[in-house]
Length: 237
Ligand code: C5P
Figure (tube, rainbow, N blue to C red):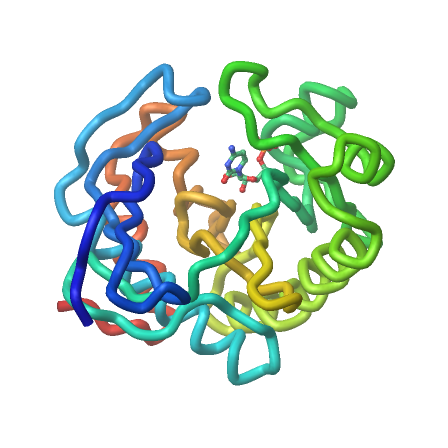
């Protein structure tokens, strides 16, 4: 596999073309951003940890029948993935209230949500990722009805797979954000699943083991990510 030109650089990852038009290489960098990119810091080993963490989770999801873009790990910080037409929308499922929903609806952090709730956000840093609904996605042409329904169904299905996976490791999957894309008419889970894009709390102590440690200046960010990886059986070099 030949790595060619940089196609796109996001806040934490860069995407490169390859000699195969249907495959791209994602490079996980150590850059760690918060508040829509207003704060960016380098955290040692973050690229490696998230690359391995994501590969492990995507493998579990693929085994359970979820179409994922991940093809294989290429190096400590690079993965080969399917090239997708990304839908510029973030899909969030919440099992408990935390983060933006607490501010928006005035609910207490930790409130259990039964059934889990679902939200769409537009991926747009300049607009601070506003919350949108299915009608917006369709009317503005970000995705069609079938793709929207598929993204929503897959996001909930992933909850049924990941909630027990983390529970077995003594962790509560509080919420998570997913992004999807399309290749040859098929919707795939794209982007990444790592502690950067979800909330995980220790089931006993409710200690935060995810990116909220960075957002809230709690320290021990990568140590927490590595502890989560260890508990779920994801081996890191
Ligand atoms: O900020 P909010 O509470 O809406 O975030 C919900 C979930 O989505 C959290 O797990 C957060 O880490 C994730 N998220 C993300 N990228 C964003 C916004 C939220 O990964 N741009």
